[in-house]
Image (cartoon, rainbow, N blue to C red; front, side):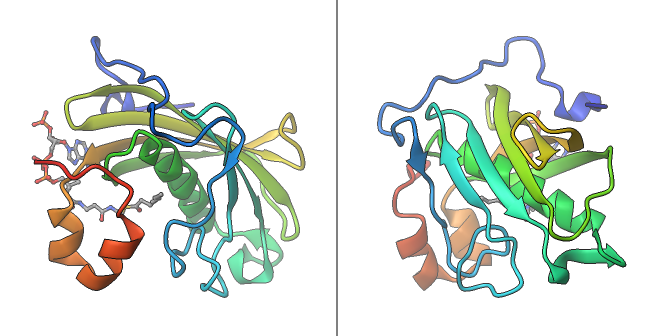
Length: 184
Ligand SMILES: CCCCCCCC(=O)SCCNC(=O)CCNC(=O)[C@H](O)C(C)(C)COP(=O)(O)OP(=O)(O)OC[C@H]1O[C@@H](n2cnc3c(N)ncnc32)[C@H](O)[C@@H]1OP(=O)(O)O
């Protein structure tokens, strides 16, 4: 991954262990919000990511590129692929049971991804320091050990629940985010 200093964990950043109250290894993660473009089942043209955590601290997911995800004829749009990386990385940092949002997302596009391809995604945390979480993901074509088509590195920033209350739909937040710790 070609990573900038902004997405590279500084010395002292710690890779967290699985949260004691997090999902056990092998758990399917489901959708965190029905209308989410990344994982929501109520979003017809969304990505419909299907995710599982193999160890409580990382995420593996599948995304099948559909007709609605094209940029050029029968090839995936780069922004859609970035959205898939954002989503799987977001799912992985949420395993630590605090609310985070994407601050920065960097993407390397390695291979074109035709419509109909199932991308096997994997995301993991390289370290957390203060409110900053440094994460990475990759997407492989056709199988978990298939050729790498896309890589991403990200900086996620921990926010209080007030972030979602101030900027989003407060009534939906109560049901969607009730599992996470509320920051002071
Ligand atoms: C299961 C769930 C899956 C979800 C997957 C999808 C995730 C998403 O897509 S989230 C939506 C997209 N992201 C957003 O909308 C975020 C919009 N941005 C914001 O709200 C704000 O800029 C926010 C919250 C990131 C930071 O603002 P704020 O809380 O005021 O913190 P701020 O003081 O600016 O920054 C905190 C630290 O992070 C650093 N930082 C913040 N943003 C960045 C950035 N883009 N690049 C580098 N550093 C940054 C700051 O420099 C600061 O560092 P330090 O503590 O060393 O001074």
